[in-house]
Image (tube, rainbow, N blue to C red; front, side, top):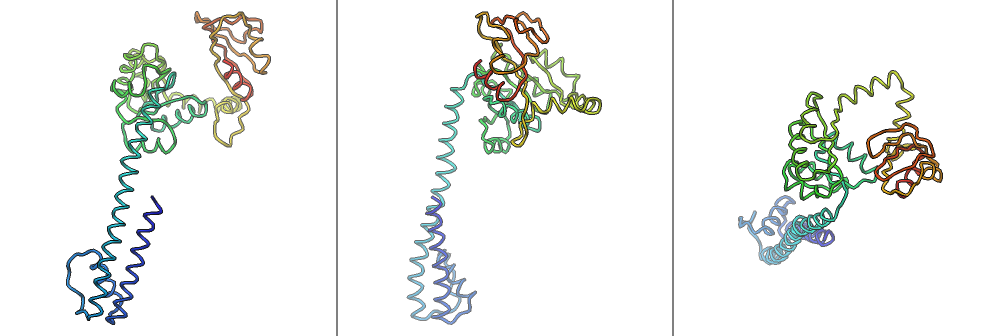
Length: 327
Protein backbone atom coordinates (compact mmCIF):
# COMPACT_ATOMS: atom_id res chain seq x y z
CA UNK A 1 0.00 0.00 0.00
CA UNK A 2 2.77 2.43 0.93
CA UNK A 3 4.61 1.53 -2.28
CA UNK A 4 1.58 2.26 -4.46
CA UNK A 5 1.05 5.61 -2.73
CA UNK A 6 4.70 6.51 -3.27
CA UNK A 7 4.37 5.71 -6.98
CA UNK A 8 1.40 8.08 -7.27
CA UNK A 9 3.26 10.90 -5.53
CA UNK A 10 6.32 10.27 -7.70
CA UNK A 11 4.29 10.48 -10.91
CA UNK A 12 2.70 13.76 -9.79
CA UNK A 13 6.06 15.29 -8.93
CA UNK A 14 7.55 14.27 -12.28
CA UNK A 15 4.57 15.68 -14.21
CA UNK A 16 4.72 18.96 -12.30
CA UNK A 17 8.41 19.30 -13.10
CA UNK A 18 7.82 18.39 -16.76
CA UNK A 19 4.88 20.80 -17.04
CA UNK A 20 6.75 23.69 -15.40
CA UNK A 21 9.82 23.12 -17.55
CA UNK A 22 7.69 22.72 -20.70
CA UNK A 23 5.88 26.05 -20.27
CA UNK A 24 9.14 27.82 -19.49
CA UNK A 25 10.74 26.36 -22.64
CA UNK A 26 7.79 26.65 -25.07
CA UNK A 27 6.25 29.93 -23.89
CA UNK A 28 9.21 31.64 -22.28
CA UNK A 29 7.40 32.16 -18.95
CA UNK A 30 9.08 32.54 -15.60
CA UNK A 31 9.00 29.54 -13.23
CA UNK A 32 6.10 30.81 -11.08
CA UNK A 33 3.75 31.39 -14.03
CA UNK A 34 4.75 28.02 -15.47
CA UNK A 35 4.14 26.23 -12.14
CA UNK A 36 0.79 28.01 -11.68
CA UNK A 37 -0.35 26.98 -15.16
CA UNK A 38 0.69 23.37 -14.51
CA UNK A 39 -1.24 23.20 -11.23
CA UNK A 40 -4.48 24.68 -12.58
CA UNK A 41 -4.26 22.30 -15.53
CA UNK A 42 -3.89 19.25 -13.26
CA UNK A 43 -6.67 20.30 -10.90
CA UNK A 44 -9.08 21.34 -13.69
CA UNK A 45 -10.25 24.36 -11.70
CA UNK A 46 -11.24 26.20 -14.89
CA UNK A 47 -9.12 29.35 -14.44
CA UNK A 48 -7.95 31.29 -17.54
CA UNK A 49 -4.45 30.87 -18.88
CA UNK A 50 -1.79 33.05 -17.29
CA UNK A 51 -0.75 34.30 -20.75
CA UNK A 52 -2.10 33.55 -24.25
CA UNK A 53 -0.84 30.20 -25.43
CA UNK A 54 0.88 29.44 -28.70
CA UNK A 55 -0.13 26.45 -30.83
CA UNK A 56 2.68 24.37 -29.33
CA UNK A 57 1.59 25.48 -25.86
CA UNK A 58 -2.00 24.41 -26.49
CA UNK A 59 -0.94 20.94 -27.70
CA UNK A 60 1.37 20.61 -24.69
CA UNK A 61 -1.48 21.64 -22.37
CA UNK A 62 -3.76 18.96 -23.82
CA UNK A 63 -1.26 16.20 -22.98
CA UNK A 64 -0.54 17.73 -19.58
CA UNK A 65 -4.26 17.87 -18.75
CA UNK A 66 -4.77 14.21 -19.68
CA UNK A 67 -1.67 13.03 -17.87
CA UNK A 68 -2.22 15.27 -14.85
CA UNK A 69 -5.85 14.29 -14.34
CA UNK A 70 -4.94 10.60 -14.65
CA UNK A 71 -2.14 11.00 -12.10
CA UNK A 72 -4.39 12.92 -9.70
CA UNK A 73 -7.10 10.26 -9.95
CA UNK A 74 -4.56 7.50 -9.32
CA UNK A 75 -3.14 9.35 -6.30
CA UNK A 76 -6.57 10.09 -4.78
CA UNK A 77 -7.77 6.53 -5.41
CA UNK A 78 -4.77 5.06 -3.58
CA UNK A 79 -5.19 7.57 -0.77
CA UNK A 80 -8.85 6.66 -0.25
CA UNK A 81 -8.06 2.95 -0.50
CA UNK A 82 -5.42 3.30 2.18
CA UNK A 83 -7.80 5.18 4.47
CA UNK A 84 -10.56 2.60 3.98
CA UNK A 85 -8.27 -0.40 4.46
CA UNK A 86 -6.34 0.88 7.46
CA UNK A 87 -8.98 2.88 9.30
CA UNK A 88 -12.09 0.89 8.45
CA UNK A 89 -11.23 -2.65 7.38
CA UNK A 90 -8.18 -3.26 9.56
CA UNK A 91 -9.87 -1.47 12.45
CA UNK A 92 -12.87 -3.78 12.11
CA UNK A 93 -10.65 -6.86 11.93
CA UNK A 94 -8.63 -5.69 14.96
CA UNK A 95 -11.76 -5.09 17.02
CA UNK A 96 -13.23 -8.46 16.01
CA UNK A 97 -10.03 -10.30 16.92
CA UNK A 98 -9.89 -8.50 20.25
CA UNK A 99 -13.50 -9.44 21.03
CA UNK A 100 -12.63 -13.05 20.28
CA UNK A 101 -9.59 -12.88 22.55
CA UNK A 102 -11.56 -11.27 25.37
CA UNK A 103 -14.36 -13.85 25.13
CA UNK A 104 -11.84 -16.67 25.66
CA UNK A 105 -10.06 -15.15 28.66
CA UNK A 106 -10.48 -16.77 32.08
CA UNK A 107 -9.10 -15.93 35.52
CA UNK A 108 -7.81 -12.57 34.31
CA UNK A 109 -7.88 -9.11 35.91
CA UNK A 110 -9.79 -5.98 34.99
CA UNK A 111 -7.97 -2.67 35.39
CA UNK A 112 -10.48 0.19 35.46
CA UNK A 113 -8.78 3.52 34.87
CA UNK A 114 -5.41 4.16 33.23
CA UNK A 115 -4.11 7.25 34.97
CA UNK A 116 -0.86 7.52 36.88
CA UNK A 117 -1.83 4.77 39.32
CA UNK A 118 -3.38 2.59 36.61
CA UNK A 119 -0.18 2.73 34.54
CA UNK A 120 1.83 1.42 37.47
CA UNK A 121 -0.71 -1.34 38.09
CA UNK A 122 -0.53 -2.36 34.43
CA UNK A 123 3.26 -2.37 34.53
CA UNK A 124 3.22 -4.60 37.61
CA UNK A 125 0.63 -6.95 36.07
CA UNK A 126 2.72 -7.27 32.93
CA UNK A 127 5.89 -7.94 34.95
CA UNK A 128 4.09 -10.66 36.91
CA UNK A 129 2.81 -12.25 33.72
CA UNK A 130 -0.81 -11.71 34.77
CA UNK A 131 -3.45 -11.45 32.04
CA UNK A 132 -5.45 -8.24 32.31
CA UNK A 133 -7.77 -5.93 30.40
CA UNK A 134 -7.69 -2.15 30.69
CA UNK A 135 -11.03 -0.31 30.71
CA UNK A 136 -11.07 3.46 30.21
CA UNK A 137 -13.62 5.91 28.85
CA UNK A 138 -11.08 8.11 27.03
CA UNK A 139 -10.36 7.30 23.39
CA UNK A 140 -6.93 8.96 23.61
CA UNK A 141 -6.04 6.83 26.63
CA UNK A 142 -7.21 3.67 24.88
CA UNK A 143 -5.00 4.48 21.89
CA UNK A 144 -2.07 4.81 24.26
CA UNK A 145 -2.95 1.48 25.87
CA UNK A 146 -3.02 -0.20 22.44
CA UNK A 147 0.41 1.22 21.63
CA UNK A 148 1.71 -0.34 24.84
CA UNK A 149 0.37 -3.69 23.69
CA UNK A 150 -2.23 -4.19 26.44
CA UNK A 151 -5.71 -5.57 25.84
CA UNK A 152 -8.31 -2.88 26.35
CA UNK A 153 -11.94 -1.80 26.05
CA UNK A 154 -13.21 1.74 25.71
CA UNK A 155 -16.18 2.51 27.91
CA UNK A 156 -17.49 3.37 31.34
CA UNK A 157 -16.37 0.61 33.72
CA UNK A 158 -19.40 1.24 35.94
CA UNK A 159 -21.72 -0.02 33.19
CA UNK A 160 -22.67 -3.69 33.30
CA UNK A 161 -22.39 -4.15 29.52
CA UNK A 162 -18.81 -2.89 29.51
CA UNK A 163 -17.83 -5.16 32.40
CA UNK A 164 -19.49 -8.14 30.72
CA UNK A 165 -17.60 -7.39 27.50
CA UNK A 166 -14.39 -7.55 29.54
CA UNK A 167 -15.42 -10.94 30.94
CA UNK A 168 -16.07 -9.89 34.52
CA UNK A 169 -18.04 -13.10 35.18
CA UNK A 170 -14.91 -15.16 34.47
CA UNK A 171 -12.35 -12.75 35.93
CA UNK A 172 -10.18 -13.40 38.96
CA UNK A 173 -9.98 -9.82 40.17
CA UNK A 174 -10.75 -6.18 39.44
CA UNK A 175 -8.80 -3.02 40.26
CA UNK A 176 -10.84 0.20 40.43
CA UNK A 177 -8.02 2.70 39.88
CA UNK A 178 -9.78 5.85 38.65
CA UNK A 179 -8.95 9.13 40.36
CA UNK A 180 -12.56 9.67 41.43
CA UNK A 181 -13.83 7.86 44.53
CA UNK A 182 -17.46 8.06 43.38
CA UNK A 183 -16.57 6.33 40.12
CA UNK A 184 -14.71 3.65 42.03
CA UNK A 185 -17.75 3.07 44.24
CA UNK A 186 -20.02 2.59 41.21
CA UNK A 187 -17.47 0.33 39.51
CA UNK A 188 -17.23 -1.77 42.67
CA UNK A 189 -21.00 -2.05 43.02
CA UNK A 190 -21.44 -3.06 39.39
CA UNK A 191 -18.61 -5.60 39.47
CA UNK A 192 -19.75 -7.14 42.74
CA UNK A 193 -23.29 -7.48 41.40
CA UNK A 194 -22.01 -9.42 38.38
CA UNK A 195 -19.51 -11.66 40.18
CA UNK A 196 -19.79 -12.42 43.89
CA UNK A 197 -16.44 -14.24 43.98
CA UNK A 198 -14.46 -11.47 42.29
CA UNK A 199 -11.52 -10.00 44.24
CA UNK A 200 -12.06 -6.23 44.13
CA UNK A 201 -9.27 -3.80 44.99
CA UNK A 202 -10.31 -0.15 44.98
CA UNK A 203 -8.25 3.01 45.04
CA UNK A 204 -9.34 5.93 47.20
CA UNK A 205 -8.12 9.51 47.08
CA UNK A 206 -9.63 10.20 50.51
CA UNK A 207 -9.08 7.59 53.21
CA UNK A 208 -12.37 8.70 54.77
CA UNK A 209 -14.13 6.97 51.86
CA UNK A 210 -12.51 3.60 52.57
CA UNK A 211 -15.50 2.30 54.54
CA UNK A 212 -17.90 3.33 51.78
CA UNK A 213 -15.87 1.38 49.24
CA UNK A 214 -15.84 -1.66 51.52
CA UNK A 215 -19.61 -1.43 51.97
CA UNK A 216 -19.90 -1.25 48.19
CA UNK A 217 -18.11 -4.60 47.99
CA UNK A 218 -14.39 -3.86 47.81
CA UNK A 219 -12.20 -6.53 49.40
CA UNK A 220 -9.23 -4.21 49.66
CA UNK A 221 -9.05 -0.41 49.68
CA UNK A 222 -5.75 1.28 48.91
CA UNK A 223 -4.88 4.94 49.45
CA UNK A 224 -1.83 5.95 47.36
CA UNK A 225 -1.31 9.00 49.56
CA UNK A 226 -1.34 6.93 52.75
CA UNK A 227 1.03 4.35 51.28
CA UNK A 228 3.25 7.11 49.95
CA UNK A 229 3.42 8.71 53.38
CA UNK A 230 4.36 5.42 55.02
CA UNK A 231 7.01 4.79 52.41
CA UNK A 232 8.57 8.21 52.96
CA UNK A 233 8.63 7.64 56.71
CA UNK A 234 10.12 4.15 56.38
CA UNK A 235 12.71 5.39 53.87
CA UNK A 236 13.87 7.86 56.51
CA UNK A 237 13.74 5.48 59.48
CA UNK A 238 14.71 2.15 57.87
CA UNK A 239 16.23 2.92 54.45
CA UNK A 240 17.97 -0.44 54.03
CA UNK A 241 14.76 -2.36 54.74
CA UNK A 242 12.92 -0.29 52.13
CA UNK A 243 15.67 -0.91 49.56
CA UNK A 244 15.46 -4.63 50.29
CA UNK A 245 11.70 -4.71 49.73
CA UNK A 246 12.00 -2.57 46.60
CA UNK A 247 14.42 -5.08 45.10
CA UNK A 248 11.60 -7.63 45.06
CA UNK A 249 9.19 -5.37 43.19
CA UNK A 250 11.45 -3.45 40.82
CA UNK A 251 10.52 -4.82 37.39
CA UNK A 252 12.42 -2.30 35.28
CA UNK A 253 14.17 -3.95 32.30
CA UNK A 254 17.61 -3.01 33.65
CA UNK A 255 16.85 -3.83 37.30
CA UNK A 256 18.91 -6.47 39.06
CA UNK A 257 16.09 -8.68 40.29
CA UNK A 258 17.62 -10.81 43.02
CA UNK A 259 14.66 -11.71 45.22
CA UNK A 260 10.97 -12.25 44.73
CA UNK A 261 8.06 -12.56 47.12
CA UNK A 262 5.06 -14.66 46.11
CA UNK A 263 1.92 -16.36 47.37
CA UNK A 264 1.57 -20.04 46.46
CA UNK A 265 -2.06 -21.19 46.66
CA UNK A 266 -2.37 -24.84 47.66
CA UNK A 267 -4.92 -26.59 45.47
CA UNK A 268 -4.23 -30.19 46.45
CA UNK A 269 -4.57 -32.28 49.62
CA UNK A 270 -1.87 -34.95 49.39
CA UNK A 271 -0.10 -34.57 52.73
CA UNK A 272 2.81 -32.59 51.25
CA UNK A 273 4.84 -30.57 53.76
CA UNK A 274 6.37 -27.11 53.47
CA UNK A 275 9.81 -28.70 53.12
CA UNK A 276 8.63 -31.01 50.33
CA UNK A 277 7.44 -28.00 48.35
CA UNK A 278 10.36 -25.64 48.92
CA UNK A 279 13.50 -27.79 49.23
CA UNK A 280 13.97 -28.59 45.55
CA UNK A 281 13.61 -24.98 44.39
CA UNK A 282 15.61 -23.37 47.21
CA UNK A 283 13.09 -20.82 48.50
CA UNK A 284 12.21 -19.86 52.06
CA UNK A 285 8.69 -20.05 53.50
CA UNK A 286 7.98 -16.94 55.57
CA UNK A 287 4.29 -17.46 56.37
CA UNK A 288 1.49 -19.98 56.02
CA UNK A 289 -2.15 -18.97 55.96
CA UNK A 290 -4.56 -21.79 56.66
CA UNK A 291 -7.82 -22.10 54.79
CA UNK A 292 -9.64 -21.33 58.06
CA UNK A 293 -7.88 -17.94 58.28
CA UNK A 294 -5.15 -18.68 60.84
CA UNK A 295 -1.68 -17.41 59.93
CA UNK A 296 1.58 -19.10 60.96
CA UNK A 297 4.76 -17.03 60.73
CA UNK A 298 7.92 -18.84 59.57
CA UNK A 299 6.21 -22.26 59.38
CA UNK A 300 8.25 -25.38 60.19
CA UNK A 301 9.36 -27.47 57.24
CA UNK A 302 7.36 -30.40 58.59
CA UNK A 303 4.10 -28.42 58.54
CA UNK A 304 1.56 -30.25 56.39
CA UNK A 305 -0.15 -28.32 53.58
CA UNK A 306 -3.86 -28.72 52.87
CA UNK A 307 -6.11 -27.62 50.03
CA UNK A 308 -7.12 -23.99 50.47
CA UNK A 309 -3.93 -22.98 52.31
CA UNK A 310 -1.64 -20.24 51.03
CA UNK A 311 2.13 -20.40 51.45
CA UNK A 312 4.13 -17.18 51.27
CA UNK A 313 7.69 -17.62 50.07
CA UNK A 314 10.75 -15.54 49.24
CA UNK A 315 13.68 -16.49 47.05
CA UNK A 316 15.54 -15.95 43.81
CA UNK A 317 13.37 -14.81 40.92
CA UNK A 318 13.95 -17.97 38.87
CA UNK A 319 13.35 -20.27 41.84
CA UNK A 320 10.07 -18.60 42.82
CA UNK A 321 9.00 -18.57 39.18
CA UNK A 322 9.61 -22.30 38.92
CA UNK A 323 7.55 -22.89 42.04
CA UNK A 324 4.69 -20.82 40.64
CA UNK A 325 4.83 -22.74 37.37
CA UNK A 326 4.57 -26.01 39.24
CA UNK A 327 1.57 -24.72 41.18
